[in-house]
Amino acid sequence: MGSLTRRQILLGGTALAAAGLIPAIPRTPLTPAMKLMQSALAADIPRPDYIVRLGANENPYGPSRVALNAIHANLHLMNRYSADPRPLAKVVAELNGVTTENMVIGTGSGEILNVAGLLASLNRGSIVCADPTYQDLLRYAETAGAEIIRVPVNESLNADLDAMRAAVRNDTDMVYLVNPNNPIPSVLDKNEMREFVIEMSKDRLVFIDEAYHEYVDNPDYGSMIGLIAEGHNNIIVSRTASKIHGLAGMRIGFGFAHPDLATRMNQIKTGDACVLAIEAALASYQDDEFPKFSIRKNKESRQIVEAMCEELGLRYIKSNTNFTFIETGMENKFVQDKMHEYGISTGRDFPPYHTTWTRVSLSKPEEMRYFVQVYKQLFA
Ligand SMILES: Cc1ncc(COP(=O)(O)O)c(C=O)c1O
Image (cartoon, rainbow, N blue to C red; front, side):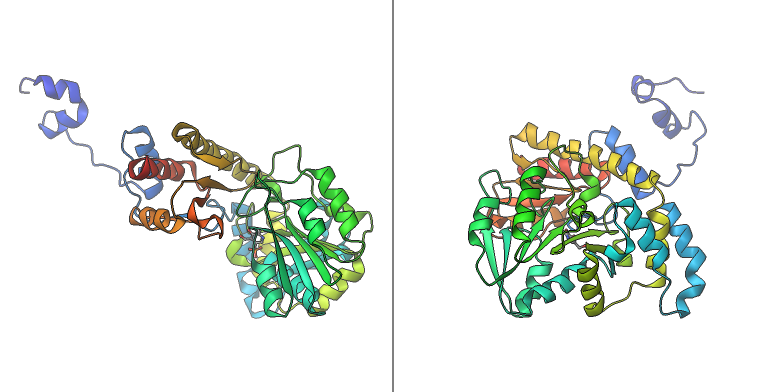
């Protein structure tokens, strides 16, 4: 063995192997996730060899192992039009303190939103909503003939319930609320909300979209499903298997309403959840390990991005969901394009906030570290 240079001693095994002083051990090829993890320890995080999806608020870990097993076990049933949805309805109803008569199963909560949007536009009246908010129900209802009354969020970027109350007209057939909201991941105070929903639903439908319900860890928040259990008859709440259960591609979600309203919605629904979606959701909703894991990871990711915002002095909305909303001070399109050059897709424009704010989904912690590195390199 030749004598070691100071450099070889300092650099250790790799340099010794390179100098032929110890046998080289073949390197294990790194998967993208391993590369990211390894790089989290290093100074510079290399670009992953796939697009880091921070634009659609998906669960990066889903579906769970339990759901995948159910999908595999039921593949042979793909010749059937549908599976019996009743066991799934029973499980989800029990989890939420309602009965199966209160339930509508949709092809994603998107179908529930569309059905409700259709119901609310039959009289060609109006729908009151906060602005910005999630657009699917509103777009559908507008196409079907309703007028949308958009009420800007208040200074703390929360839905302005007083202004929404004042915006309601005689022809208003629905008030639409998303809680937590999207793209602004804030929540409304549960007591104010309950009072507002009860009051508004006396003369019209009130729809509460709770797609991100499972992510919320905030004592101010409360689901409105309880009002349905209490028998209120003009209220619809929606939930989805797309987020915490990681089943976005399966297209399955839920509506909750008074039995008469649920029956009406079931009559005008246009889709049927597919066999695999029903079986995957049935398995997934009986497992609490995966949702807990997803919540823990989401929290880790949120802390990584929030720490960056604090460090750079960027305003951001404390997230109650699996995405965050950051005031970058730049056009969203510019941020989007720049991030894309580094293999990251971020949220689309949300007018009128698109000139200075960007929505960023919370994916795996190692991916958020890469996002932070790129953001700092580009803009800090
Ligand atoms: C607030 C909100 N509601 C509903 C949906 C639709 O979810 P899905 O149709 O996948 O259930 C989304 C999707 O991102 C959302 O953000």
